[in-house]
Length: 506
Ligand SMILES: Cc1ncc(COP(=O)(O)OP(=O)(O)O)c(N)n1
Ligand SMILES: Cc1nc(C(=O)O)sc1CCOP(=O)(O)O
Ligand SMILES: [Mg+2]
Image (cartoon, rainbow, N blue to C red; front, top):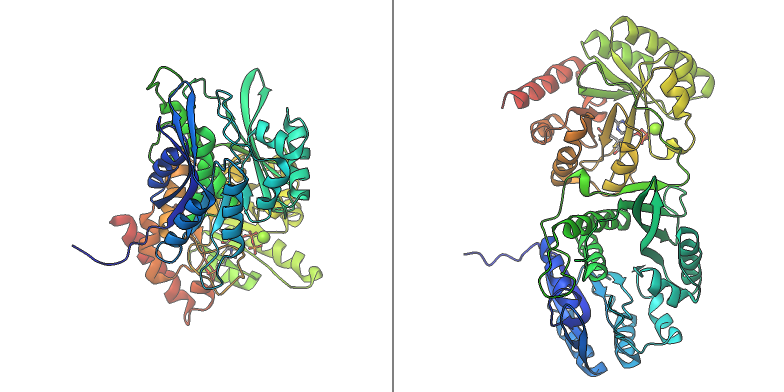
């Protein structure tokens, strides 16, 4: 028996009860459990509901909602809150007042609002007016309307991707922080496709919006999809995932849940609650409009990357080649541009004579000009690099990623390897994201394994950590300071290789 406090994030749902068990509070709590979160519930309205219809609505007072919220605040403060059904103005005011008075002493949670107005059977659940609902907009981090709800919120009809984007922009204009429009139907190559469109207030990677697409799952058993999606986003955010990744995970969870859904009552059955999926077949295709359209696959590596030092000069490249290193990267930062070309040219020529896999960071034009083995690009570089030219000149391509979302974007280009960073805190580069840790690395590696694309871990990896990192099944280990700050480079390379081989033998 242990009395140690749980590390499970706490997530609240402020929503209605569905007596049929498929939507509302019941769907939210099932979802929180799947995402290994502890769920707390603040019930707004009790619905008498089955799989066919809603026969009654019992709306709790503002005081009843306020008391539930305040009772939880100090004892079970949330990492995230999902708001669902608010049936009337009094209920909305209770939530608005509570969120507006959030105490400075308690970390503010991530708040998702799924503005439920009617059920999928057209039963009206709320009497909120547009003007009333706008009071909540600025207090939530993410709004997750479907196309009907967005039409209502924006006051314009939403029928397709373009009108969804315009309406999302209009709602942001009215005060919302970011909007995920769900369930935009379209057709591509004769297939029914469902788009979820994420429009953040501040663009990601200069991208005004991201489109998550999935082939429509042919099922009538889709009751509770909206509730489940928004609570999955809240739960994933509570687990520390950035919003775009929380959406990616929620999208995959819904896809899996729809495939597994079965009819339970006489009407549409509920979306199933499964373990969080980690198979690419459930993950969406992610399209970022400022990135090039994918072309052909990039060539494979000649050998698994293994120990992969990243260094900043010809001298380092030469030294490491002499020490037997056969996969390495030249990453030159902040040197005058006239000196860079010569360093790159000499490094490429020398690496070629050793039949080594040398990747050039950033300088893809010079890499093409001097016939490099490969280039390593960050996600931002994908916007400007000529991927077609890299491909037609036979260069290998490595792409940096820092999240599920970036992995799915990188996968569209079928690169020669995918880098996963940063695993541990690093002193070498200022990173905008948090360290991922070994648990995320393990999930990413197993997600990517079926693709056959090699994976490389980077960030804060030392000799002491190699064995743990290798155990995740990653194919390469990229290091900067463990090599460049070592007192004796030769000894460091030998020891790092020994650690790596010992990990292979385990
Ligand atoms: C193996 C490997 N992984 C990631 C990076 C980071 O590359 P990038 O995103 O291009 O950032 P900079 O290195 O340019 O700062 C890398 N270099 N190598
Ligand atoms: C250059 C770089 N890119 C990273 C990424 O995650 O994309 S982490 C990183 C620095 C790696 O250096 P060290 O091995 O000294 O921690
Ligand atoms: Mg770079």
